[in-house]
Image (tube, rainbow, N blue to C red):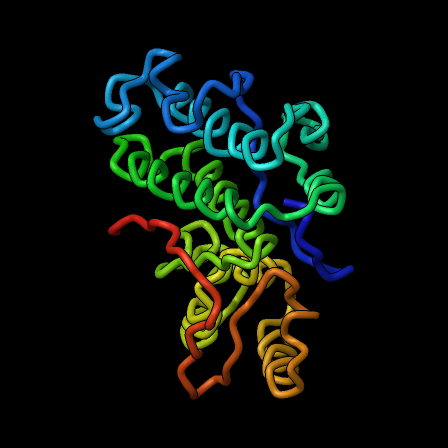
Length: 250
C-alpha cells in the first residue's frame, strides 16, 4: 500500500495480492455481487472458495469502490506490481491513487454516502468462513485502508474500533510493547497504524508522534489522520462527520 508515505529505512510492508478481477460495470454498486452469482444477505463465501470470496471482495469493495467513487473505470494493471524473485506474484500498488485524488475534486454530497455503503457491505464479509484465511484477510485490510484514505479525502473521516489483526501482529513482531500498540489503536485509523508498521524503532516512533501532537503537526506527519491527543489523555472526537469501519469480533 505504497500511497502511504514510509520512512527511508522502513521495514517491509504487508503485501496485498491482486486476484482475478471482475471489471466494474457501473450498473449499481450495492447489487454488484448478485450480477455475478453471489447473494447479498448470506455471508459471502458460505458456498464459495476463499479465492472466489477474495476475488469478489477486491473486485467490488476495492476496484469497484474506486471506480464508483471517482466515476471512471479503473485500470487494474496500473494498480498492479510484481513481487521480487524467486516467487513472482501480482501485488497491489496504490501509488496511482494519489494521482486520482489530485485530478478530481471531492463530491461531498455523494462520496461519503458511497463510503458508508461500502462499510455496510464489508460487514457481510466479516461473517464469511474464509475471513481469517489468506488472501481474504489481506484484501480486507486494503479495503479498510482505502476507505480511511477516501474518507479523509472528502473530509468525512472513518474510524476503526479495533486495529486490524495483520497490523497488530506485525507491530508485535517488530517489538512494539502493549502500551505502544494500544496508543496507536486509539487513533482508530488504519492509515496511521499501517504507517507505524514500517518504523524500525517503536520508541522513537512514539516520541515523534508525541512531538507532532504537541506542535499540532500530526496531520503533516500522518496526512490521513484526523485524530489528536496525548499518551495519557483521551483522544477527542472530531467535529467533522465520521463513520465507522466494521471490525470482526475475535
